[in-house]
Length: 341
Ligand code: 5MM
Image 1 (cartoon, rainbow, N blue to C red):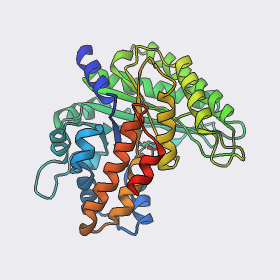
Image 2: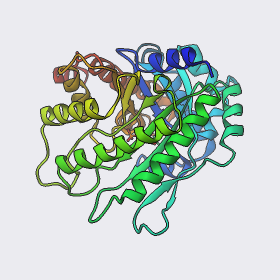
Image 3: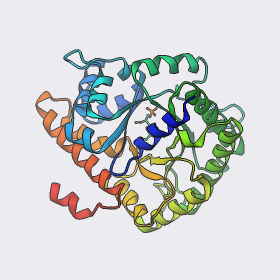
């Protein structure tokens, strides 16, 4: 393992002003997204949509540091025969790959899930590296509800995240470690804080036990937020203050960067929260976005599967990427959203 190189890539992934595009929706998830805009989820349509994003010059060259791909996408070529991975590289961004194989019910723990995909992972990583992937992603899902999460669910998911991260580093690939505490539910922000703290502490404990080099990874956590169905929604300032406090308590400064998931927040909320956190700096790690929905909802709607809408889709993507790029430096203002509308 060349740790200097892993650290260089991890640092580039969280460079100020840039963040990660999570375009790694599995077949079921992208179908849901396409259903919402009335587009059939065929291999061709998925390719056309993602090609539109990766050819967005402004967004990709200025505000996107890396792209997380799904297995299908990493092997796909653009319409003109250029591999989609090459389009990403040519823009200056780093290609990455989601390597988990989704979740399964966790035995003995009703309502809880464990992420799978460790079998043959070493062989798969080798192939992804040859194709150009320089980082990977594995997402664990922790739900908050009555009597959950159990310590069992937290432990097995942390163990799998660390196994994955160690295999990545051995294959010279930077692991994005994503333990997502879901924001569905009616819990308040303090319950989210408490559960996320337990999850992050256990995850870093496992990473240490399995000898993962913290300098060569990126953490992709949820923010501390109120559950979507909670009657009392925390303000932007409270989310920022509690999230920064939580991360400072749990994430060693050796980690080069943290790139948040958006988790169901609105586009503007996700941007405002990241921006407000930077107002609380200086921070010990790079802090940026790795959004899926909060970067793609607008371009998906603008595109709606029509070739004549490609420019509109790219414009919408560039706008969200620019807003989040500014937020990653604490330079975003809500008036910039209105100006573009
Ligand atoms: C883009 O969605 C990713 C893949 O999800 P599935 O495996 O469920 O299809 C997802 O892991 C994503 O990278 C993170 O959840 C962040 O996305 P959001 O939309 O929460 O920012």
